[in-house]
Amino acid sequence: MARPVIDIRGIHRIYETEAGFTHALRGVTLTVERGEFLAIMGPSGSGKSTLMNILGCLDTPTSGTYRLEGLEVSSLDDDDLAEIRATRLGFVFQSFNLLPRATVIRNVTLPLVYSDVPRAERELRAWKALKSVDLPEEYYEHKSNELSGGQMQRVAIARALVNDPALVLADEPTGNLDTATGEMVLKTFARMKRRGKTIVLITHDSEVAAWADRTVHIRDGKLLSDEQERAYVAATTHREASA
Amino acid sequence: MKVGDLIRETGSALDANRGRSLLTVLGIVIGITAVIAMTALIDGMKYALVGQLGLNRARLVYISCWTQYGSVTASDLEKWEQDLPGYEFITGTSYGWGEITAEGNSANGQIVGTYLDYFDAMDVNLVEGRLYTQREVDKGSLVIVIDETTARTLYGTGGPYTGKTLKIGNYDYTVIGVTEASQMTSNTSYMPFTTVNTRVNNYESMDQILGYAREDVDPDELAEQTTEYLRTTYDIDEEEGNGYVYVYTMASVSRQLDSTMMSFQILMTAVASISLVVGGIGIMNMMLTNVTERIREIGLRKALGARAGDITMQFLVESVTLCMAGGVIGILAGYGGAWALTGLAGGLMGLDGIQPVITTSAVAMATGICVGIGIVFGYYPARRAAKLDPVESLRYQ
Image (tube, rainbow over all chains, first blue to last red; front, top):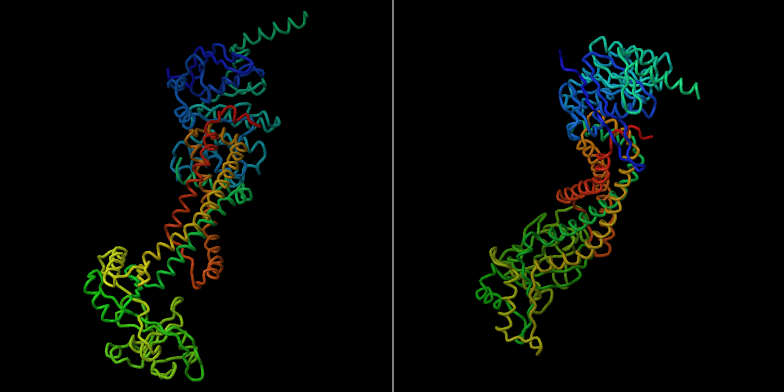
């Protein structure tokens, strides 16, 4: 069997804050195979953002191992992590995070600036990425702040795809969009999945999570399977009902 | 990150803050303006003086000597030349003043009586005619070389002037040549030494003795040697009042000029330094504001794979570019300012016709200062940007 894209084992993440130590992740183990579309669900404060940051190599675990396509990344230094982000990861954010005064094309080529892709190749790649998210060509030279929310998020997805990453990480990608536009964005993810992309999507919305092949739940820094989640919810409801 | 990318990022970042960038670089502009105006002015003055005195000026030794036996004569000079082999030649001049009249016009001016050697040491440029000959010097011929200014005063515009006659005192002289009028020698005419002594002044005198040092001889050492020699030869002791020796070189005059300029230079350097430091702090302040405003952008860039070094470079190039833009404006303004100041300085020092001189080294120095300020004052904000945590930056509102 091929190496999984994500292979994390026994991850702990402890923050030191003024209030003391916060144990955000308590022994998370997770495997995501190539071509899989995974949703991670959890309420705020559950540790899902921390997990997302670790998966995105923006943060390193306090303990545990993280293999990205077989490469151990939990002990790399900042510059090496930056290189991993530039070449193997694509990010889609809730608030799009486009450069407002730059054109669509320039926004999409931005990651290529940091992965030393020759200039001549950049526009071609951006073009392909934009095609794959179905953004009409007449918008390519528009400034990104002239676009609608749905268009902006598709530009952001194109940006995440442009360096042909091993893994696309989406953090509440539909959080700032209405239901219809959100659905259009989710369809874009579904299409990426059909083309073989590995996607990890974080959400608190079960309707959004339903688009994924598989859903894991996170509560108090621990992952729960669907059954465990149902048991947890049932127990909580029962406690509340009897109280 | 490639150089082209850096330039593009910088261009769009500065373009977004045009008004603020322009105001911030004012301090740099003022500082560089002061630096350039100062150096342009000083170089201009030096250039004007070198031009006026001739390129050979460094080899000139001026000798003034009065002895208890009377005025120095031409035969004395011949003896000096033999005893002081450091000189290529020593030549005497005498000065005469008089009203020059011709065709009902009159001009006042200095008349310098010279030997032919004089023209080897001083750069006198003829615009028409010729200089006098050895024969004319020996005979004390009634010939004169006038300058363009005098020629125009006497005969109006439009030459040639050669062959015309003019009158000084009781004698008529023939104009045989016309020299270019320069700032220091305007209204100066040249005549054979003997003619000035016998016709214009009616008495023997040698007012100014000019020595011309050999090329491999240090003029200052030669001047000292000359002073010693003259004191011994004529038994001169200034304290007893039985004579007087004063020898100086053009090199020492030029050094004196340099030291006069120095005080001016120190003042301008102080003004420039203060303004550049204040300007640099302004740049730092603006860059810190830029970093704070763009925290999310920095977070995004880091998430997309920018290394700390990439972010540092981006902000450093931005601050250096800002300073360089200020430098360019300052160089232009300084050059303009130098033109305005030459009028003023010319009026105060009685020198006109000074033109500011912009040297490549002055421009290189100004550019170097700008780059330096950009790096020194841009480094802290750039490092601060580079050290930002991507996770927190992306969440920053």
